Image 1 (tube, helix red, strand yellow):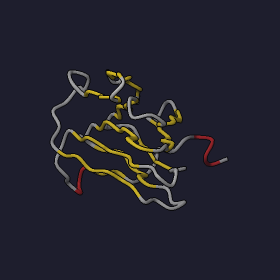
Image 2 (image 1 turned 60 degrees about the vertical axis):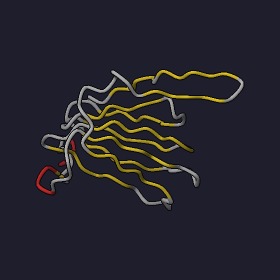
Image 3 (image 1 turned 180 degrees about the vertical axis):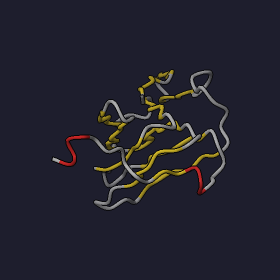
Length: 127
């Protein structure tokens, strides 16, 4: 299941410096960022192998997460919050502030076959 990690941040009169070091359970193979998002929802998938770390380095956004057992919603509203997303976590991102920049660090290079777009189904869905 996805989990939040507080990134180590050093603050003084000059500003803030946030460090991503020894907190990720994977080596980074890809970095991408999402910005300029309108009212659209992004994501809407899970993976076979890829682990991700999502950090809203500016502004804020919300990430819905479902691992097939538990569903959670996480608000990323500070650049020192990092959401670790497991491969089995079906996730979608929404409610981006106008100034939001969501940076994602990934454990794998892009591979179209790694994506699973079908959300989990539950017995109550058919009621």
